Amino acid sequence: MKAIKELLCIYPDKHFDAVITKPLVDNSNVIEQYNNWLNDNIWDEINRVLKPGAHIVSASEDDFDMVATQMRLTKFEIRDNIRVLHTSDVDKSINLFRYLIKLVMPPKGGVILDPFQRDDIVEKSAELEGVEYVGISTN
Image 1 (cartoon, rainbow, N blue to C red):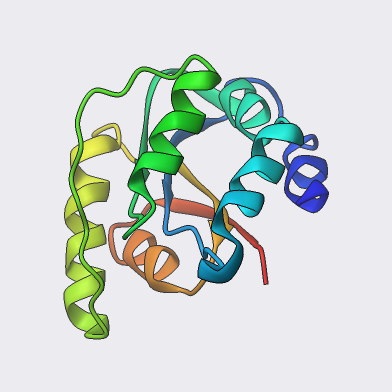
Image 2: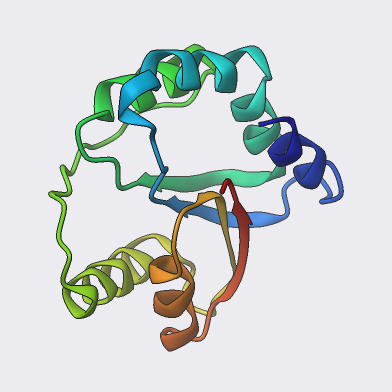
């Protein structure tokens, strides 16, 4: 996980307009994984590179409570909760993320950060919406 923090260090403060991610969680060790993210201060670094008022969309499945708790512990405000159920239909996933991008991005585009990239769904969605994308693979 240190790789995420190290890669985020290259970006200036307030660089990204939004975080849109689908964290890959090892269900056999989910609590340890989230504790590592907290201990490594990854969310603090994400907070540093986000513009004021930026949105975070985390399409977590069974682990929403863990993500929300981490965000609260690093002083993020939880404004809403949309539960995303797992779908293996790539087209439906891309359509969902295109919609979410339209909801949270400024009208003239911007830059999306995906700090826990697990596949190319968010990246393809950003490309289709004409939005710059930076993904950090955790695989």
